[in-house]
Length: 354
Ligand SMILES: *Cc1c(COP(=O)(O)O)cnc(C)c1O
Image (cartoon, rainbow, N blue to C red):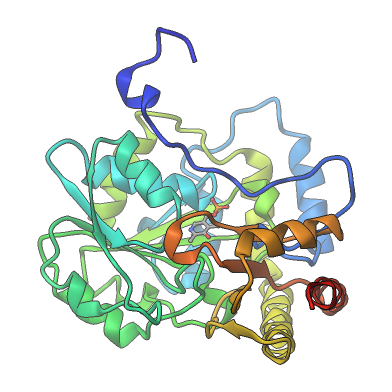
């Protein structure tokens, strides 16, 4: 760090992305990527769009917004495509937070919320999850600022039904409520159907997990026209070309190939059931997941040790150091073959322990 950096950044604890190893080949179950490659339609759209890279992309993403609106059952005016859904989350903190304002979120949830709160000068109001890691909706009624809820939550995988979320949205007429649906396609209900009824609701979606496009960086905000206008103020004061032309083109192709991605998500939900039961039979306790990962622990074993032993055996999973979850591992649901290799590695680790 230089002596020129501003105070806010000098003291900021930044987000730590999961490892993207370069040398050794790992079975990579640490960042909730899809194990299935993009469809041929997506790949060919990327090639075609490359021919126009000399031109700026459409800052309004018109064709992509139309495809998204049709798929989400809303109007194009309700959709804002972004450079990964992390960007729309940042836009929301920037637009609705700031000095003298608060953001309300759980103690165990997506690690970017506290970082965005800090970098935008928004006070963080933390609502601890219950001992079973579920969220109590009444903690969020009449909240003290913008509400951020990941549904399903990360890294727990636990989802709330839309009826419970609607209580929170209806109970906050003076706050924006952001529902982060990064994993909704793997088994939870979407709140997008509520945006017509509630002008204070922002739903965020991503193609990183469900649509095998983590590397393309494509996410969406879906909300009332007024909220989209607020978020566009941030976009047009930062980078109007935030979604590049290749990503816009492959986004449209990915909507067109929606059925293929639905079947990937269904497959992932099946393998999740298999992975969970294998873990339980090895003595793990596994939270009920509606996402493409499970959050598991084994009594008497440190999460960090398990993480390191798996890494030695060529399997990468995610471990978080924060006290309430330090003995749990977040394991991405990969293919059936990857899952079998993970289970074999775990059996090997456990046999050496006894
Ligand atoms: C992965 C993730 C995101 C962001 O993903 P992008 O790749 O930026 O679209 C947002 N929220 C949660 C809870 C996530 O796990």
